[in-house]
Image (tube, rainbow, N blue to C red):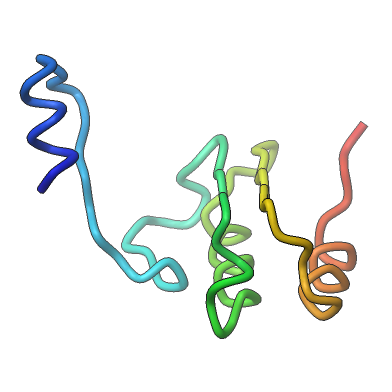
Length: 88
């Protein structure tokens, strides 16, 4: 509600704000060109679910960007390293 009020105040019309479970988003497979996961994986009980959901939603040549100011736990780091390889 706060974000919508700020958008309205600034005349931004082409934006939607939704609240959803990040491990079960209501979008079709292969819906996004870019997915940003920022400062999230270290605060959720099952980060693998969020990464798997991102993999479901990303288009074939899309990019998933994971950023955190906190060093990941070894299990998360291993999961990311084993499931994502940078394309050159």
